[in-house]
Length: 351
Image (cartoon, rainbow, N blue to C red):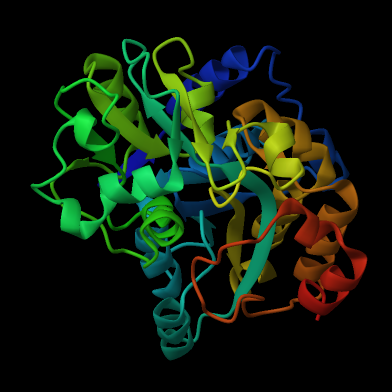
């Protein structure tokens, strides 16, 4: 599914997310104030629905500071965004997983050099309808039983997940195969990336998934935490037991590494060619500026530390191309601390 946000739509999404997180959203674009106001042009950004709320907030702030620049924010999933990026059709791709080997090969084939810019961490949210008062915590094994390909057509009742659960239908909703969230969740839960049962309702648009769960008392779904944060009154959050007890996704659980294996880094990928245009370079620098950390946090994600973001900015300024993950795509066990260690940063982000 492909979704385009007009700036009116961006303003609406950003306002809702900010309101749900308890404080008004600044739109002054302070970090961009040092960039000359003579910037003009259009910047194109596409990709992950998980990254979309952040991109919308930052695009709004940047346009406020530079009204002669248009930032076009689209959503077609991480995979769809990489296809457009490697075809040279967009300036920046938003991604909820690192670029994989096939996508890297396609970029090399078309001559698109990429600059990988991590900026935050997400804690994937597993959610049910508020009417569900029994599935307050699920083990990783139970999630695997639900989503494993072998469960297709077989595990169709909540009681089959845990015998103490009621004998009610199990209605599943989740991202489609274009989604980086789908790639990461299947690797973390099922054990193999992109291996999942198919008898569930899928969408690349997380707001569609939110609405479906809110309407169905038997529903279970997963998506980026920001979409839970913006709809807390319509959804119930499920804690996950990864082997060390039940842990609910939260800022602290991401920061201390306890929400494993369902926390993962978020990225934007900048085209080196596009970065030759001053407006595109200014926007990318603004995106990963430490001054945007409050916007990232209000959406519901965990911003990388200021020191880490400054190292990410140096990666952009030095035109360091390629992926620090070597084309592996989704990678488990990466924590916020990984990006905060100075030695690892030196070896990874500023090679």
